Image 1 (cartoon, rainbow, N blue to C red):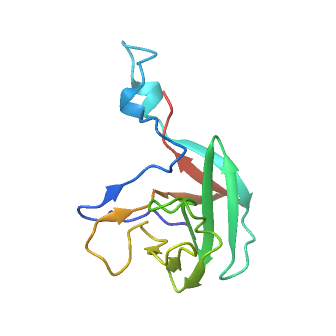
Image 2: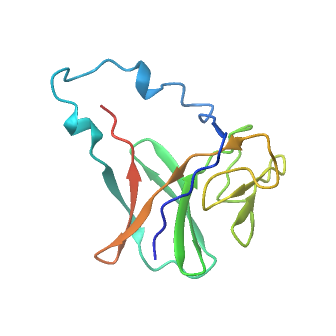
Length: 143
């Protein structure tokens, strides 16, 4: 089963330290037709055979993504903690909460939202689907 991540009300998405480019700052390639840039881009991530409770680091298209399987559902979040860039795929997993080993911040893998805090800190989450026995992750179009 794949999941579409829920939103965190009032959350702030912080880019990984090595990613300072925002899509809104990029020049438009095609000024008369934006339909091509609005289509989702599904990338092949892995075989859909992760054992229950397992996780895997996926590197595709310049993204480092932590992929988890919890209670039969696959979730994907940015691997870099938004606080200081620590790897989340290596963190302790308790249910749907992963704890960053660097400073102990906790994130819900279903949404990317910081668990137990109203600070609004969030790591990016990605929709995941199973297609022909493979896991695919949806990335934003890059213009």
